Image (cartoon, rainbow, N blue to C red; front, side, top):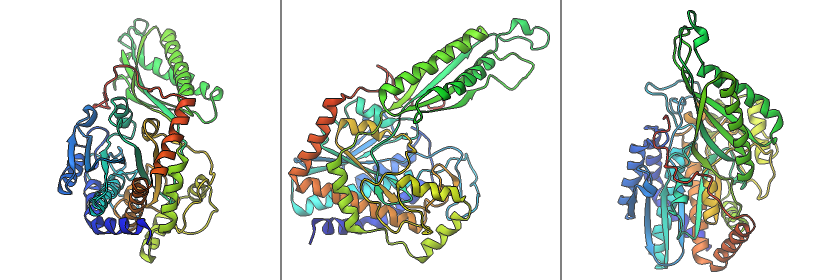
Length: 471
C-alpha cells in the first residue's frame, strides 16, 4: 500500500465537515481584508480540529495560523477566503441571477480554496498523530489575495521564516500543476488636486483634476504599444471628482494595476506610468501624488515539489464526476462562447474536446498559451519552496471572475474537486515528511534560484497592509 492511500482516508473522514465550511463561506462573501466572518469560520474549525491557533498573523486581523504536531519539518498549507465585488449570483442556477445584497460573490472559488487547504492540513495532522512521527503541519489563512497581497506583507514580516515547504491550490477547469509563471504587480493610486470653479461663469479660474485623470489614461493607452507584450496595465476610477458637470472638479483619484513578467520589469513599467501621471498634471496645472497600495512578485518554480504533487494527482486520477455533474456543467457551458471553451483548453496546453468537466490529468510540463494573472503566492515562493495544484471544480470554459464561477461554487462537482485536490496536497505533504531526500532537493533547487536572483520585496519600506482597500 502506498503511503498516500492512508492519508486519503483521513481526507475522506473529514470531507463532509469541510464541504460544509466551504458552503458557509460561499454564503458570506467578504472583500479584501474585510473577511471577518469567513476568518472566524476558519479559526473556529482550526480550534475544533485541535490545532494551536494564532490569530492576527502579520498584523492582519483576518489572517490566522493553526499548527499541529511537534518537531520535524514544517509543512505550510495555504488557504484563502476573500470574495470579489459585483459577482453576486444564486448557487446552482445557470442563468445570471444576482442575490439581494451588496453584490459580492465568490467568483474565484476562494470559499473552496480555503476549505480544501484546511481539509488537507487536518488530514496531515491526523496522519502525523496516527504514525507517531515528528513533523508539523500548519494551515495559514491568508486574506485579500484579490489585489490586497496579504501574503506579500506576511512574507515581509517573516511569517514563513521557519517553514520548510508550502503547498496550496486554486480552483480551475482542469487538474494540473500550476505552471510556475505569473505576473509581478503593483497596485498604485494617483490623486490629482486642482482648483474648483464655476464651469460656465469662470472656467478660466478652474484647474480640472478630472481632466488630468483622463489625460493620464490617454497617455497610458499610448504606452501600451511600447511595453513588453506580456505586461498589463489596468485602471479604475476611485473618485471622479463629483457629479456636478457645472463645477470644475478639484480632485480625482484613479487606481492603476501594473503587471510585468518579473520585478525589475515591473518597477520600470510603474516608473513610466508615474511619469505619464506627472505629465498629465503638468498639462492641466494640477498636482499629483501617488502611493503604492500593494504589490506581488512573480512565481518561483520548484520542480522537485511539482513532480511530487503531480505523482499524487496521477495516483488519484481525475475527480469522480458523475452524469448529474456533467449535465449541470453543460447548462453552464450553454451560457459561454466557443471562444471561452477553446481558450480554456489552450491555456492548459491540452487538446480541445467536448467534455464539460475535467476527465484527465494535465501532463506535467504541458505548455499552454501564456495568459498570466498574478498571485501573492508568488512572494511565498521566494521565501520557501512552494508548489500549487489546480483542482477541477467547474465547467471547462468558465471565465474566472464571472457570475458563472459564483454559480458553481456550491455544486456537487465543486465539492468533489475540492476533496480530490485536498488528497493530492495531503499526499504531497506526507511525501515530504517521509522522504528527507525530497525535502533536500526542494530546498537545494530553491537556494540555487535565490542565489541567481535574490528576493527583494516589491513593497516600499514601511508600507502597512491596506486594510481599507477603498481608501
